[in-house]
Length: 258
View 1: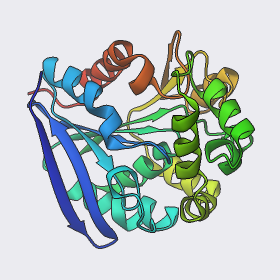
View 2: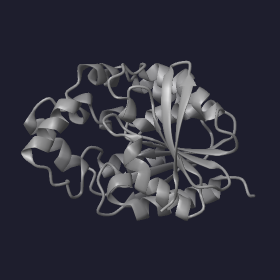
View 3: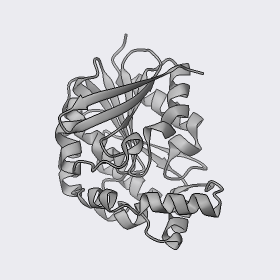
View 4: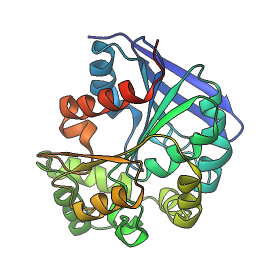
């Protein structure tokens, strides 16, 4: 098992926590979705370390290990925050964003030595993006629908765990943050980026239609797409090995030679 490191960075838009593992040329940065956390990337970080890569999972202010804080708006995260974060990490970098974390990651492409961007479960077509209601349920029925749509095999959760999860996700602060995303601003940032671009889709993702992911790759000719079987919206949680296969291949083709 790879040794994990924990870092706290003081950035202009707030305290930022990272979990890291491994050594190697370049760095792979993982950005979680709303409601997810860097801690859930630990198996991915350990696997990437075993494959000879240095990687880090990031909790933006108000996410994951820093829940309870009011997150900056998405404009702040996609602008000053992500660019400043990437500037603190020396050397070439690959940015990997899951779900709405893909929008956050895109803001880092302006930083020096960013060599690639991967959008996981996140298409370029606004009408196909998951809504805050889908991602942040208010009722038990909405939560049940989210779990069924976002996982190939939803995790078994008892009534108490489901109540705790619903209480965590039905959060006014996080909901306001989710509603601050302007897809047009994000798309302008994405289409200004001219480097290597990868779309990663879960074949069984019920939140984002697979067709929208294929069409997104076709919309940007330089991009590639990889579809992971038996996988929903969160490949780093359901298919760690196949997800790492995909990221390693992308990183090896995108990072400069040693």
